[in-house]
Length: 87
Image 1: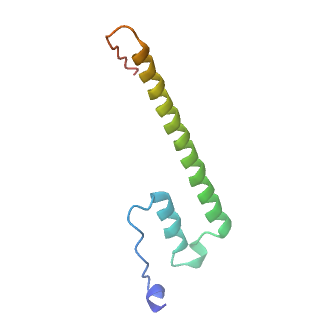
Image 2 (image 1 turned 180 degrees about the vertical axis):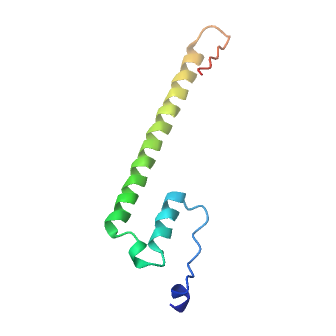
Image 3 (image 1 turned 135 degrees about the vertical axis):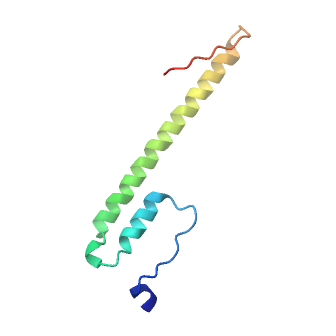
């Protein structure tokens, strides 16, 4: 306990997403008044969850687009492949 009072903190697990590390760091602030309350922690966790869900939706959409494009190429009787780049 003396170590904690002197500012020692456990080392976060390698590979922990930065959003979780930020919550962890906020919760271990030296001054208790600077620490988030449970409602703030829950709000941050919900935001992380929403962002994760949005990323999964984007990834799924991207994967579906690739599959659809791949099927279109496979079904194309022309043996040439055309690429387009949209900037």
